[in-house]
Image (cartoon, rainbow, N blue to C red; front, side, top):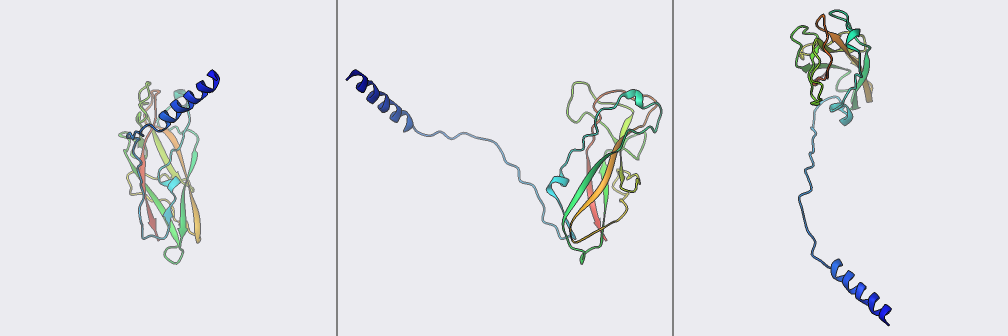
Amino acid sequence: MVKLFSIALGMMLFSAVASAASTTVQGGTVHFKGQIVNAACSVSAESSDQTVNLGQYKSSLFTSVGVRSGAIPFNIVLNDCDTLVAQSASVAFSGAVDANDPTVLSTSNLGGGAGGAAAGVGIEISDKQGTVLTPDGSTFSAPNTLITGTNTLIFNARYKSTAAIVTPGEADADATFVMQYQ
C-alpha cells in the first residue's frame, strides 16, 4: 500500500511540473542575405562568401622581394547562366592594396590571433591563364566562355613577398569581386 501511495504521489508531482508555464527567452538573430539580379548568371551562395585557406609557409621561404608561395586554386561558381543574354564572364577583385606592391592585397590579422599580423607579404590573385589581377577593381580576368547552366571560373591565390624581410604572423585579407558579362 505504501508503495502504491509513493507511485501515485510521484505521478502527481510529475504532472504538476509538466503543466508549469512555458518561458520564452531571446534565442539569437538569423541574418538573411541575398540579391535579385538582372544578369546572365547568378553567383552561387557558396562562392559569394567563401574562405580560401592559403596554409602556412616559413618566413625563410621569402628570401627577397617578389618571391611567391605555391598557388592555391579557388572557384567562383555561376548558376543558371543564359548564353542568350551573355556569352562570357570576367571577374575583378577589390581590396586593401599593399603599400609596397599595388598588385597584391595587403595582409592583416583579421582573425585577431595572438601572434599579430605578418609584415612584408601580400596576397596575389591570378586568373586561370596566370594573369595577375590587381586588387583595385580595374583589372578583369580573361573572359570565360559561358555554357547554359552552371559554370566554374578558376582562380589562384598565393603569398608574395613585398619586402626583403618577411615578419611572421597572421596573413589574412578580404577581397570583394564584381562580375562583368559580355
